Image (cartoon, rainbow, N blue to C red; front, side, top):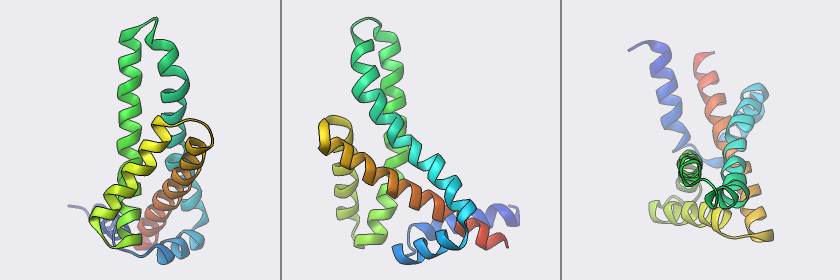
Length: 145
């Protein structure tokens, strides 16, 4: 295994155990990495909510096949975001059960509720994904510099 690949894996593993304040400090030290993480990680929950609330219901009545593909995309977005939120929850609460509950609550509220509740959950998910993915990229950058 290459040194770069080991460094990335170590940085990825650290993001699940590094406390939130340290992740934030690292993300601030490497703003380019944080911006990339914010763009990539923050868009995914928005994609999921837009598909789940707007496009999936409208498509279901006319094209079940396409609606099932959209549902698969929503599930994929939920998995992507959920893993980051779970790591954030573990680092924040120090308890696996709380991290799972936190993840299910945020992702679930964002996907199944409407109005302000769903919008607030989306904003929180975007911020967590931006920080988590941004600090992960920043930690990998720090390990390679």
